[in-house]
Image: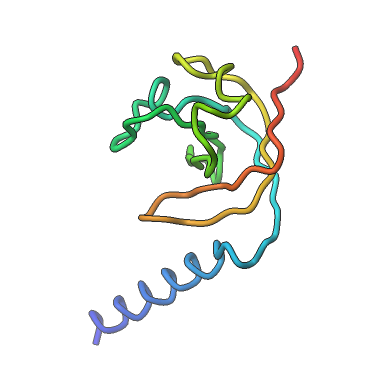
Amino acid sequence: MRQTALVLFALVVGGVIHFGLRADDKKEVTLKGTILCAKCALKAEGVTKCTTAIQVKENGKDVIYYFDDKGSKEEYHEEVCGGAKKEGTVTGVLHMHDGKNYIKPSKVEYAKK
C-alpha cells in the first residue's frame, strides 16, 4: 500500500512538472540570473559544444536553464564564452527535454554596469 502511494505520488508530481513546462503552452516567462556558457563556465556534463545557459535561484537552489538556440552562433553568446559570467535576463518559452530545463529565448539582455 505504501509503495503504491509513493508510485502514485511520483506519477502525479512528474505529470505536474511535465505539463507545467509544455512547449505548446506558449507562455513567455522572464528569468533573471547569471548568464554563462554551459561548456566553458559550468563544465556541464554531456555538453560538448558551447551553448548559453542561465543560472537562477529557485527556492534557494541554483537551477540551470539551457538556451534552445544556435549556441555559440548567437550574438549574445560571445560575451559569456570562455568562462565569463554576466548578470542578465532572458525572456522566452520554457520546456523540458531529456530531464533538462530549456528556454527558447526571444529576448536576452545583460545588466548594465
